Length: 397
Image (cartoon, rainbow, N blue to C red; front, side, top):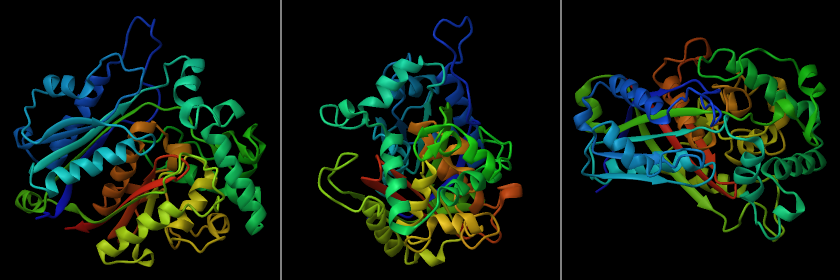
């Protein structure tokens, strides 16, 4: 029997630089940073740490000095567990998979309380090593890497195709970056908070045509912890919580860029994952009050918002430019500031997205609060949305 699952506590560090160069005399230790997040999240949940039965970690980056990070953290936190202690890995979906598995631990009854948590440090790494370890080899190393494909390159191809198919302008797509920076200015966890104009976005140097510097994600360090529990536990605590209403996943059986002709801008896995999640939750896209989407580049937010039914197909860029997806608009998207401005510590980025949904649904988002928010969703990807994982969440007073 599957139990109803709630999110009862969250905590994260501001995205930005935490990791030092390997030869720096003073180092920031990932386990100490993550331990602070756990303490804050557990306090936010209103539980004793002895209630925690499972811990699902996002696998740390290759630069982490401590091997077997999950079991090391269980020792450091003095947290024995009867459910599971494990790490998961799945490209940009890593944090989402950690959350998904923590939810499963509670839903299945293996634990009454579980943590989804992790760190993603990369800013102190050598640039060449970072490119080789985390960018060049993400595609097919035999047939894509040798041609120069990197994640930004395939997103750029999506942008060119989108402009060709729907007549969108680069300025309309770039408006996503302006909107996200405006949201980030209100978020204390955001890496970049200084407002930018559309003219400034368009004036930046190209990274991969037609995507400029402000339209792609920065390198970021981060750490986050989400506390999930059975709804019975959440009710006993007596604090507002967030209920998991629906979940959907789909992998299209392709790795990054498929050699099989397909619709480059449709993001079919996101559509299929959303369809299942909405149905399970008993809602439609029109019922969403806001959405927090995993979108490394501006064009990705455009395409995934369409794929999830939040915006009509071919109108994602125009909707951003008109303010439809801004705070105060019809369907606010990426109220956290998105990956371009809030920051993108890849293996925990989905945890930051979940955190933002929780803050909105608990009405703790301050100046960026979506009025009367009751239903929200978060979605993440494996790579170029060849796979998508989506959760629909609901506020419970």
